[in-house]
Length: 275
Image (cartoon, rainbow, N blue to C red):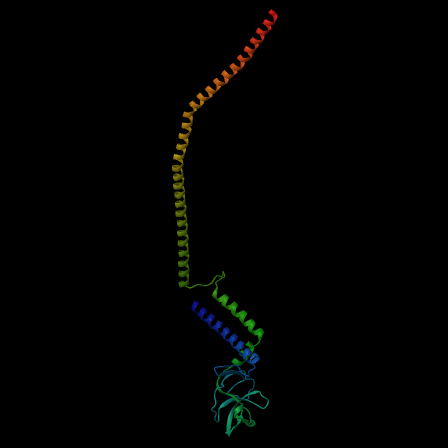
């Protein structure tokens, strides 16, 4: 069943793409380039709209003509320009010089003689009943509707009841393999992150230990300096005591000087009284 669905989807998509490309190319050749026919490697497609060639060619058929053909003979079916400049596909009854006489298989009368230069192409093949389909596809509204319906049909066929895509066993195995691969890669990333975090912690510990080792001798040197200062402090104390003693002696001297002066003054007063 899955194979049938896939075949149907591929055929439908190919038909839609081909029809779309054909219509786009026809529009470009006729409307933009101003050609009468859109040819692909010399071959052109025409829709039959009259029954003048019944029962050989029916109304609604699509015929393919070769525009590169140059050799024509009696009983060939050709497409040519008539007096009004329209396309006509009839059978050649006779060729006289540079002119030809044609007639429709269903018609009772013969066409007017036309020059061979009016021939557009020679009939090659017909597709029964496809002319109407191609004509319908040329309408923009029909093209849009067909595309929408085709997309919806493809979506419905390729999905299950839950709207998930229908996968084959090979695709399921491949997806499971991808999931396992992703999970394994995630686990590896987690392990790598853990390893890196452990390494970073170890590096931090090593740096802390190294810093501690370098700070220890610094502390020892500072302690030694402080001990030296402490040892030198008694000398400082001795100098302070000496300074104190000198200051005390100077004060005592200063005190004794005014006492001597007082004694002198008292002695002078006594001498005056005696006199």
